[in-house]
Image (cartoon, rainbow, N blue to C red; front, side, top):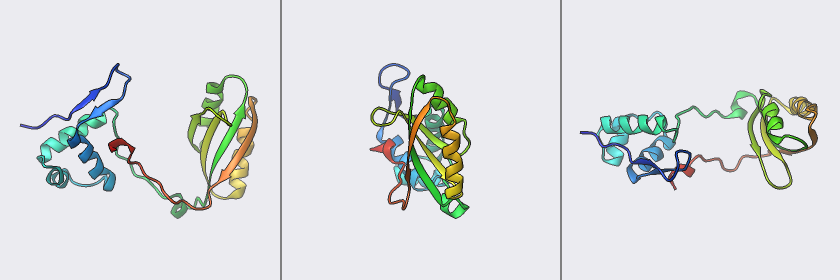
Length: 163
């Protein structure tokens, strides 16, 4: 008999998911190696391969996690990365939707503070960054931008789901 994952919502359907320790351990193993065989994960966490397979599927179905390939932009010919703060007026969600439609923008978040929206871009170089800035500034509701060019990546993790 397999052990079902302890995935339960804390409150309404849109509330946070509460994970049991075994589900957290499985996620931690997959964060180390997303291609780790279920049998190896099972050995590490004390479950059968079938139980791990079932838990992983349920975690994916619940929207708790997805297994994806994470690439290194530098090795793929994208040496320029930047975060761009955007000040705008009018409907912020409409501006965010327009920004999200720009192919080179891979992260869009509405914020409180100095900027209304922050976006992240991965570029082929400085001239490409300038092109993207021109696209952003051409959106009628955009009033100003401020760019934060990445010089060196020091830390990048995806481990917030298990702490």
